[in-house]
Image (cartoon, rainbow, N blue to C red):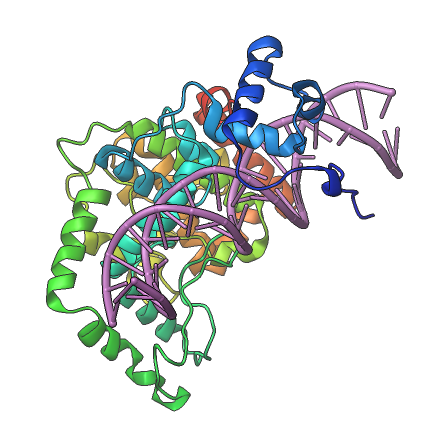
Length: 359
DNA sequence: AAATATGTCAACCGCACGTGT
DNA sequence: AACACGTGCGGTTGACATATT
């Protein structure tokens, strides 16, 4: 069933708002408050769609909005949160007082995405392009022109795409991709800047005053939402790079190694993990079957619970079908597994329901 | 000075979800 | 259960401003 348009498009004004329209809108809200937006145009004497009125209010006229440029602190926060939860602009905006989701989204698209790209970091996965292509090469498939590499956003649209003019090699020459990108596309200086940036942005920082709890919780949200989405998403979750801020030993190199790995890449680690999962950590797994926590991660502080969960969900999701199968096998269905995992997350982070999803 | 390219950001669109009937 | 409606969200567009050629 095709939904009818929310308003008669022939009789509504579109485009930029005039000062007069803004004044009418403000007067209406001052008198009647917000809500029932479909009735607002008529009541306020505006030839606008109700949706347009709401948008104008929420994105521009609201008195609590900041209209100045983003601060470095806000910029950093956006990058961190984007790394944690992706393009959930409304959630990110909630952590930045006076900013709207539209502000944050525009700022990301106009500035931050480009900034990261220029540093050789994929703005969607927050991983170096060279790493993404190296991983992609490891998969073993040939890359066709126009195929996606990295940039695994929910919508799968905002992607880093190979174009013939950008990478004018033939498919037969694909074996040269990695070396080409690692030696030519990312010069030493860029790598240095990249590592410095990543250390500052994603690793522990004594001067960092952002809420670790919040970021951990957002990680947990992403775990839940990603796990609750399609099975395909299991293979496309971006790496959680902002995570381990409390760990003093965490570095970018660790991140690269701890990142989603392919079965066979680390046979020893797989064995160790398998042993751990099968024995004493069973308790943890049953508490949250989607979050399998090996000993190496459990040694961290409790505040990393969500983070660890994310890491390991990634491992199980992206690397080992066996792990997924074993965790799922404790439940009668995939859906039950997801539901149990979700319940556990919200038990662990009860304030998520009150704070993060407060609208 | 004019043409073109690029950047910014307000606004629009379609879809999903929650709620009421 | 099915539908209508209101609302919110994320992706995209397009107008305008600014920079570059």
